[in-house]
Length: 457
Image 1 (tube, rainbow, N blue to C red):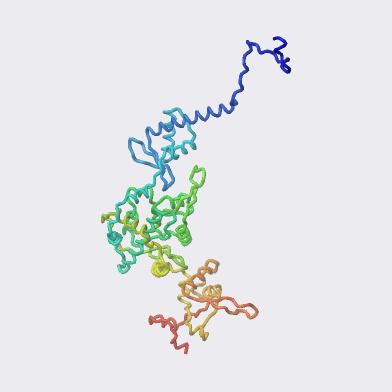
Image 2: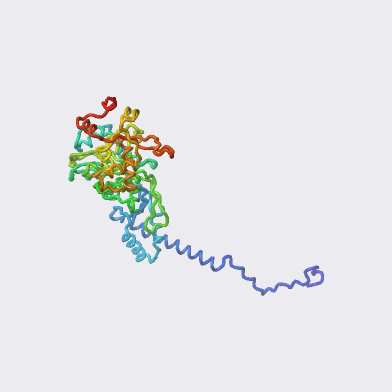
């Protein structure tokens, strides 16, 4: 290189040798990241292989009503819910035929995903595929098979059943709707009560979507049924204890069900879909002294279940009524009528019977002039009765006191403020008359004490 070609600042830069090799560029990805990408590609390819294999021999659908996946063998066509054995069989079949082993959670997630299973609601599919209602009142015709003990209640029976059934339909097609009432058939054994209730469900839906037996509110599987069944039939309700009857009332008012299934990764939320009905032989099964409006009992003599009927048109009418705004709930005046009707089926508690025998509600004139009036606390009433020879074995405890208070309210007794002790402020006490011989004679004559009773003059 001559002196003219040399420029300031470049004197110390060595000339590049023609034989010098270019330096190797640094790798874009580090080894760990490359391995991760390869692993993901491998897992993705594995899933694609598994999905292709499964789609070749099976069909899957996700049942929105119960939030579970169903499967069918393509050659056979019938769909089934997975049980543990079917799940393991298919998973092992995949391993044997593809060589791919997939963890249980990943396999379960794959089967229930939209990649494999189409959404499906068997209940709405049935209801929305029905023919239009033909305009005939199918409730009246359908219920002719039920022979009541007292046919004077026929119109009321049809009216109440129609409301209950339309409410049942509404709970299946509209999430905000749920059925708070329980239809109850009371009658002799082998009268066909349970079979009639089961016949309300289309036959092909009965296996998976009905439950008949003793409902246990402590069993989480039974609680789940509130959102996965059409009908829960309380067979032989006479076995229910007082506490269980109270629990069932609370269950019937439950709108949303939160459960965690076995092996489930998180709780699931189900809208209440199931309606309740029941049967029993004992005509005294109601125990609540404060009200029994949730129960719709009717005494039946016999039911002819051999009569064939077009159930689809009964459902079509029920769906039409619901969509048309039919009032399926009971208004206040109807609730009062229900309460009055239900008294026939109420088991009278011991405390209420003792009040009937020993006390009566005073007349307004008696209260005004104070004739024969007793002012007593609930505790006073209980101890007054416990001191009688015929009740000496009666236990005096909080439960008896609570039931006595409810019985006093039930029978129409009222309270008044009275000063029991001169040194203490007034307290609320019951206003009663002790049932004496004159009262007993009046009752035997079939009369009631009134304002003209000679003792008031």
